[in-house]
Length: 263
Image (cartoon, rainbow, N blue to C red; front, side, top):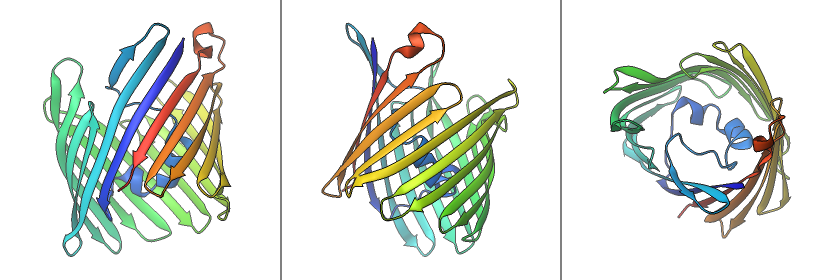
């Protein structure tokens, strides 16, 4: 049996601002280790065929910069998981985002949420937090905090994620900008289960419009993807992942397809 993941991304923007902590501070590391590998949101469309399971979601983002100086807006829809509208303020040494939206609940449809994120710092060092509050459940869905150091060819970060349960130390290094050769590493420790995972990743442009990525972690998961860009507007990524842990079901390969359109 083969598991197939399909993620459609449509990004419509006028110099869109996305200032949540995870995007602004750690976008390069997240792109290398996670983006395009077929991860689905917790709630997604599912279709089962004779010998294949297919998961599907759609990610739509758009935004407008400079409604007034320093102030912009952004909208994001991850169907069928969540939708959110944000107001974003940018200063030379700080960025603040506040928003509201809905998030899928397996038992009661959709719950309203309120979000806030903020980053302070300079080009070289930043400190930030990211909060999401579920109004119906009266609990925080997300409590993240982090510190990052950024230099021309090196990014390092230390973050607390998943309601401060997971500590992540990350490192990203640009080896050759001309060939987009990059290496990255992440160490993740869970306090609740006392477990540590190390993930290593790399990427290389084999042609001007073709990018290859690979990653491996200490849990025995190995993944790779190839990304092809067409006309600077459309990109197609095909990814695969195999879990080599001693479990017959874990050896079933997962294949992911991501289509991204940027008009």
